[in-house]
Length: 373
Image 1 (cartoon, rainbow, N blue to C red):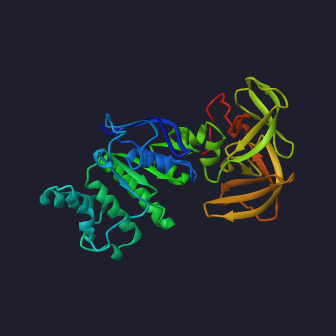
Image 2: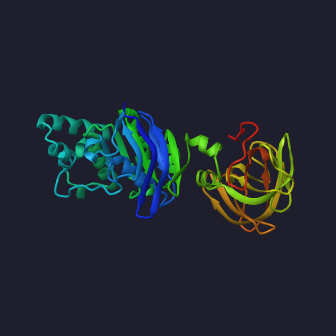
Image 3: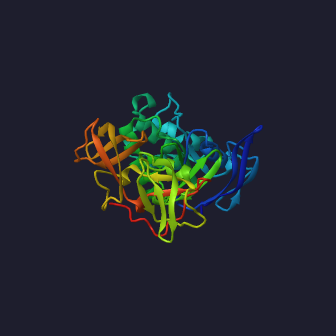
């Protein structure tokens, strides 16, 4: 079993703490994604698992073995980097086989492994080409093939698609997910792109300033963010966040003031809340509507003007300035009639809203949100 377990992991460079008390368990065969902004520590965490960085404190086990002090070669993992790092003078076949030759694997076994990996990655027709004759996507497949032939306990990917253009990134995401399903291997993937994380992961670990903010399935993080950071990071476009105050608190939830003066009832726990208390209101762009609300009648409206309208075909993204100067984004279906510099009303449903306390923690919902289709 290729479980990866991390216990109370710390990593510092001098006085600079990069990883702070990180603990998690990555299950055998799981596709785990580390996501977060630049500088959050996600690549350092991956490199520490690989053995390229030594932890300041804590423990790492892979497949039940404590590998905390083991060199990279003993850990049974294989890493794919952002840079393809291919040898330009070698053919694809030779690049994929190089690590096996260094490990003195018999020639017949090397040839079999190379052919098998090339077949899985659909690059068997490229084996006699050199890297300069390959596209970016083909080079990345070669780099992945070099990892596959080693038959590792776990695959580690450090932003492997960031050098590719947008269309090819989408294609390679699909191929990597398919590869994971075919191999049934444990994969740990680092990216700063939350869309990439949401579309590929079994589970996501959201990192911020060297700490894990939340671990969960993609839709769990989207529907039940633990705090302001996760709520603002997961979702595209990002959640609209506003400072607000409690208008009333009771057994049915918390009524809060909208920008512009309206009031909406949010069905979350009102424990310890009182009228006038400061909170943060979260409204996802796709949970707002123009002159309506998605999935049902609007409980309240906010009026303003569409400053910029992006017509994206299947959907519309409107950047709105409300009458009180507050800015927000609204994402709606693509057949609506929305024009730039026109007055609009933004519909709000309280059951789709989120509230966060002064510490940034999400107030627990009284019932599961029935999100619109």
